[in-house]
Image (cartoon, rainbow, N blue to C red; front, side):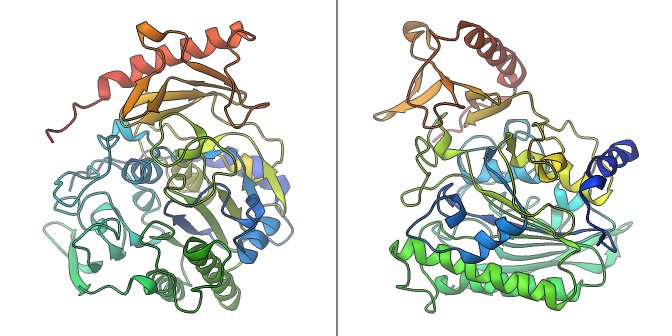
Length: 458
């Protein structure tokens, strides 16, 4: 298996510890932090009570936000799921990985290159690691199963549960090694006839089993849920309860299981030692709320497809009730987790940055001077803290280049501070900002343009 060596970054880890030390309470964690990352599928920015939802009840997630931190300008690294997951796991824009274009379908044979270092690999060897839920980063060898990428355990689906055929799989890395220490990969099909209305419950249950089995050592658990992606099949205990119908039912089911998770962490004495994060892989699709943000999943350039909820909680380490509007992205999770745990930073060229300070101080600035939003492997927008320059959109059945030579005045400069709904182009009012953003766009095109791959033959 092709693996790059890790570079030790003790200076970064020391700087991180110094940065957040004043915020820690007298109840210090007694060991390296556990990490539980909950990744919802197509959860909208406005689908949680704390984010303004009125038809969906999420008391456990609202309490999580009250006891922890909420980042209100947090982005997925893509507006659809395969590239977003690739960016999250590697800390790199998906275009660097060859996975920026579309999603992996049943007949596809490509996947996350084994040369990429995932969060699970970056936390090795100290951490037990598991991916429970949806993978969608390659379902044929050598990209499958996910135990090829640093996870000790995989329990879940190869891709979205609306793609057929789909089966529930279990894979684990054996302690027995062969061929110079390479781990044996064991994979079995568990159930050809999935009970769709039991997936969320089953994923949380398997995740809780993993936590209990590894309670005496640091662990990283990624719970990649299928909800609220279609098909919407709420558990019988939650069906018909939400004023938002089936979509609300499945979101409320996630919330109920978050309550189970926090209760179990407390029972095991792990609550103070565990960083729990909830976010989404992209914006909402046919249903779900963007909280007034423009466009939806798959939309080019506009906020609704990229900006997602982000809540983090670790008592004694993340201040209760913190809200920070500095921009961040899911590519930041790998470097943040490495710093948070004192692990070694991978030697890959990372686009993400350590956002630990955003989880410690209300007014901490973003470590990013800019973020790049892509539609497939084309740049759709450039975002700075105040400004956003949108250069790709959709009109009728076509993707439109708003800054094409024949329509140079169609590109939109948005003042995100005053117009978060992206309703108005203010380039005529702010020529200096326009000049800055267009220069940033050209630099980004110079960097990422050569990495774009040609579309596959239909």
